[in-house]
Length: 381
Ligand code: ADP
Image 1 (cartoon, protein in one colour):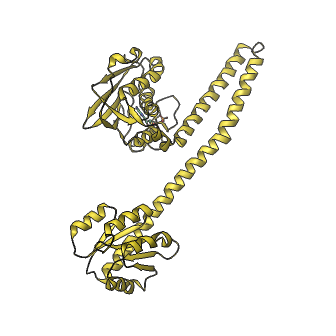
Image 2 (spheres, rainbow, N blue to C red):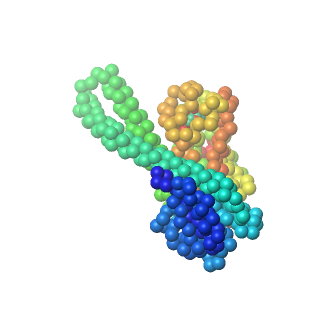
Image 3 (tube, rainbow, N blue to C red):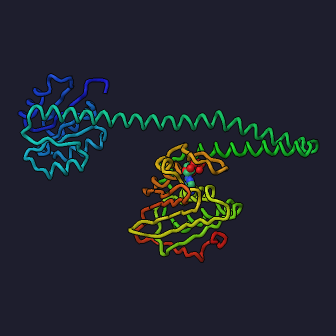
């Protein structure tokens, strides 16, 4: 708020409007008044107030309807209701509808000044949070653009040249030179994969995901995820055990991104578990939720790392894994799960394995015919 804070007072009683103006006149606020709800709502779009006082009991449209309309026009506007008959219930109802606070009539000048100050502080906080969120989004897009143009494109060109060159020289290279060529190619492939992960995590469009939402079977999601991680697990001689407590209601979601989320969890379990260990993936239904848990006997997560592992680019401090680490897998997983109105949590202790749990709202009255027998037997170990 760089200009003077703007207040709007909507009340059908002249005495309230006049006294509010008189009380606040010395403060550096711009104040407008409206004698009924319709007039007040009409004023809002042009005037763009920071704080609106709304009388709950007015002829014509009620204070509650005014609150709803303000919320539709601009949900960042802070509203305070003026309650005539001091009915605490209606004040509570108003606050449930988004009002910031209430001011019971009659009120003293100090009460009005104080609540106005608090309302404007709240408005500042709301605007700051919004600005920070926009800045974060801009940084995210900016980062994606830089990675894409400045890194991915030139690296793809290098990869192309290298492939052509190694083809042309294939008959002339010594064994050692060929091995070094391969190493360069592998490193570049790894870098391309890393860049792909960054771009995926930075640009995954949650709104787009929602457009593809359809009833989705979680046992199928889990089966596809395990199938995709299997080669990695086999290389480390790790067995993945699936247990599904059928019947399981389906969820509303996008199968592809849900598979990606579960792949990230199982992939991490493989990455952070010792050779020859076991990972258990379970699917069950409880309290109208479908729960997917991925439990491993790996290195576990320290309590210092635990609060941050779902943040962008956070990689744990205990660097016991030699594998590639971008610190984006769990951040992306959480965004995918939250886009499905679900939640993800973790229990882990350093040295004692980890248990990740995804919780998704079950779709009422919708079960898929997916018994273990229908799944690809390759995925059940
Ligand atoms: P990355 O694995 O690429 O570092 P993630 O976002 O997938 O990134 O994970 C963030 C961090 O959380 C990892 O660096 C690791 O420290 C920790 N972590 C995630 N999953 C596990 C697990 N199953 N066991 C131990 N540590 C894990």
